[in-house]
Amino acid sequence: MVTDAPIPWKAIHARFAAVLGAKRLLRRREDLLAYDCDGLTLHRCAPKLAVLPRSTAEVVTTVKLCAQLGLPFVARGSGTGLSGGAIPSEEAVLIITSRMRRILDIDLDNQTILVEPGVINNWVTRAVAGEGFYYAPDPSSQTVCSVGGNIAENSGGVHCLKYGVTSNHVLELEVVLPDGTLTRFGGHVAEMPGLDLRGLFIGSEGTLGIATAIRLRLLRQPETVRVLLADFAAMEDAGDGVCRITAAGILPAGMEIMDNFTLNATEDLLQTGVYNRSAVAALLVELDGHAAEVEAACQQAKDLLMAAGAQNLQWAKSPEECERLWKGRKAAFAAMGRLSPSYYVQDGVVPRSTLPQVLKAIADISHRYDLPIANVFHAGDGNLHPLILYDHHEPAIIQRVEQAGADILRLCVEMGGSITGEHGIGADKRNAMALMFSAMDLDTMTRVRQAIDPQQRANPNKLFPTPTGCAEASRRSLRVPVDVY
Ligand SMILES: Cc1cc2nc3c(=O)[nH]c(=O)nc-3n(C[C@H](O)[C@H](O)[C@H](O)COP(=O)(O)OP(=O)(O)OC[C@H]3O[C@@H](n4cnc5c(N)ncnc54)[C@H](O)[C@@H]3O)c2cc1C
Image 1 (cartoon, rainbow, N blue to C red):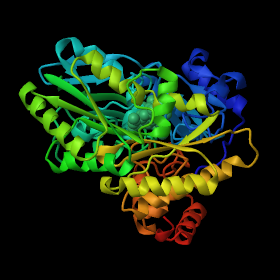
Image 2 (cartoon, helix red, strand yellow):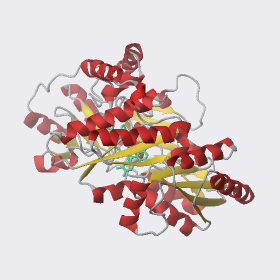
Image 3 (spheres, rainbow, N blue to C red):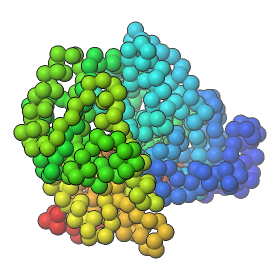
Image 4 (cartoon, rainbow, N blue to C red):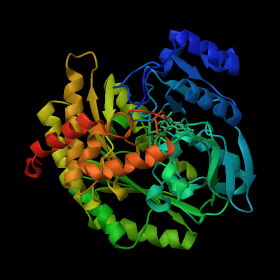
């Protein structure tokens, strides 16, 4: 385990300044406070030192110095993570990749692009859109989150229903291991022999080292895109619409649902006029591909949605019309910021056929804890994002919010799902890992990590449960019987 730094921080600052130069460092408390949390503001801890490297060589130097001094380190991209993954601990050096933002190579013949980790997700598409290509994984935070963060979290997005998550689009990684060794995982082609270390690194949340260059797959832009917006008087009907579409063999690029609370919040913010404010649920379906195929699927999807009980149906053909229908969904999290000083986003997954039942159970949790909960979710793959609204000024509120969040996670596991779909475990859910994994599973994961990082200096206290936390989570899960829901 990591021990306290053996030398005072003043001396540590001096050592880093001597090797990297003062311009690469943040040392003053007022500068460091800006990095005391990520998108999950529930947990905070300011680092004592942050390094802003400009190159792989500088990351190697930084990590080697951490190893020499026995210091843990935490990688940080844009800090939009929602599980507290990039929050430093007091004794860790924060390594921020936001100055590593170069696109290193574009190879359109082989449909790949090589980028530094601080490159922002939608810059990748921007760099190749003129040639008819794009990068498929599109988290809603894509205008600000970094590719390095996407790799670490194995991020998803609206289009992951059809195109898969980040791991399906990464060919090769250049990685600085926790002892400062520079290595490569994967290669120029998708299938490589040997152990899949590329796959191991993706989704490891910064616990196996720092990615310093990433080769991504590019896709050809689809010939045609259509978006359908259907509204429903009952959540069961919207869920039925989703099931009918998939049962008919249609694979939309994305299928998203907003509940009444969320669609009204987005309308208040944007005044798009496209959402029916009295609807219980709004379902967005995007279809893409060859023109004739999309037209046929679109007609079939319309019929299926009407049969499921859609009250109103709108469809968009031009890119501008499609954007207009999507606009509210994309701004859903931002809209919550106007309703409440703080919110806590959960990220559970359930089998999609259970969505109406699970949403009813979440409404019960909302009443039980007297906390408003808005729901917006990737309906096609059952990935829920309940947003628990609260005012952090209220005394003792945090404990109530965390308990409501924990109940939602337990519910997801009990329904046969998972405690995270795309936001990762981080600091936030590490004790909930025991809800899904046995002690032996967790021990196996820890051994794999220790093979690469024996002292567990890369992003300590994330992803893996603490021994007591683990037991607590298990005990709590036993106290909540399934029939409560
Ligand atoms: C409004 C909003 C909407 C969002 N929507 C989505 C969504 O639709 N889908 C989704 O999946 N997520 C979503 N997120 C969560 C978040 O944007 C993603 O997890 C994103 O991938 C984080 O990227 P980042 O650069 O901000 O990473 P950070 O928050 O800086 O870091 C996240 C984790 O990655 C590690 N890390 C960062 N860079 C590296 C690196 N180079 N090498 C190794 N480890 C590294 C960190 O240590 C940390 O554990 C959303 C967040 C917000 C605020």
